[in-house]
Length: 441
Image (cartoon, rainbow, N blue to C red; front, side, top):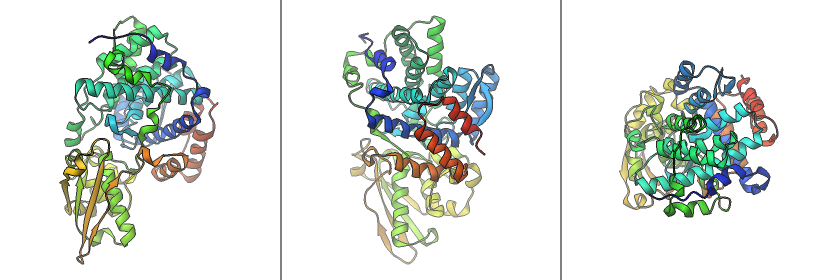
């Protein structure tokens, strides 16, 4: 493979300014920041975060960087490790259809840790998020084409973390080029379809991608050298040419439910039919879900852990039918032995529909047929998942999600205050926001 080092990516990362971003992109950055804070906040209530904190305590105790959801402080590497175990813990973070994963969660831990270490403003944090989304998604498109393999979020999170942190650390473009090369070379293999079929805390591999990206920074500063990365290859230069002109951040989707995106379509279809025809879970005799092959491969076993509940297709639909929603409360370990939900799972059937499957991954569609106990047969339309890029997610949309998703963990007053802080206070230090979050009761 040949590489062309012209520093176009590095110049974009280092020279982007908030004031020169289109207003639409500024608004989207705020939406993404709110969504990622939601993910970190919920994630800090989970067992995976506890693992991350223990790892940071064992290896990276010296430092004054705070982390979301805990009163301990760490150095940069420790804060990255801890928060990377939270960001994807409840599977509520943004995604991008064409890279088949979650860019924001893949780099937010390292970028937030570095922002706190350097005590930058919220505006600079937002600008760095934009830069990270743009280069991460482009690198992921190149990586999946080059390797012809479905790597997931942790893989491209290595590159995105290195890019964002490199900007915040004020690296020279030569240093940043070296850092991106190291991150590209060492990016972890994250075989996401294995996690789909056998759910565990492995999930999207986010912690290890964040760790590699953070280490790429430190390797460069320690004198290690690398050479070349995929976006420098001639066959992928077309992805670089659009930096600063078109914005992949506008092609993100946002998730209303705490589970794999591939289960969102039938959840929404079922909930809409319930509302329209005014039946309850006990009225359901049988449901057939018509979906694409990858979704049909999601686990259908009765979950024993929150990760098994999220990377599942039967449990989320059943829980949504029983509870009328699927959020934090429905996927906690304590909620998984609900007999109504387990019984509802037995009434679900899954069929791979060739026409629907042919649309994947550009479109992830599903429809459901529901038979009620009285013999009534109901059919849904063909559903896309809520929050797609075509839905033009804005502050109003993310506000509704924020209030619904954080309701179990924040008071109504705290919800309003935190949302307002994230929406309107661009010039305050990022530490002020994190301190505010950590003082919420």
